[in-house]
Image (tube, rainbow, N blue to C red; front, side, top):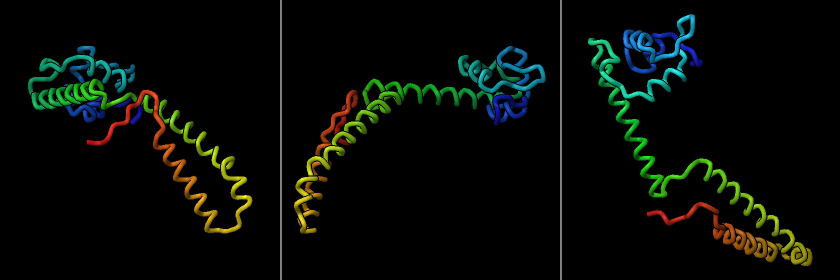
Length: 161
């Protein structure tokens, strides 16, 4: 759906009746264009920033009120859980993860690019395929160990419980 929808579409999106949407419009809780379309983002921001109250719903729409209260309680619970996880250092921001991933990828690139310098002269004098294979395998294992030991700034890696 676009940024602007009809009252009926907005009612379906929010799980309420069209009467509730009309009441929200009258109370100034929704942003509506001159041609009667509801600005979804602006209206949801207003509704989400306010506590849902029974007075926002017509008397015959108490089920929608209870559904909205349940949604609000679930959203608050999710937010509280996320905050608790962040405080316990089990949840990190996307920005921190992206920065750490970039740092780890850069370090991996640096380690991998040293392989040709270390092996070129050794492999140039070797003609036995089995020995070449062993040398390459040993080098790749060393690179894998180095990569496993890379510390990522800002991220503490702990063993799974």
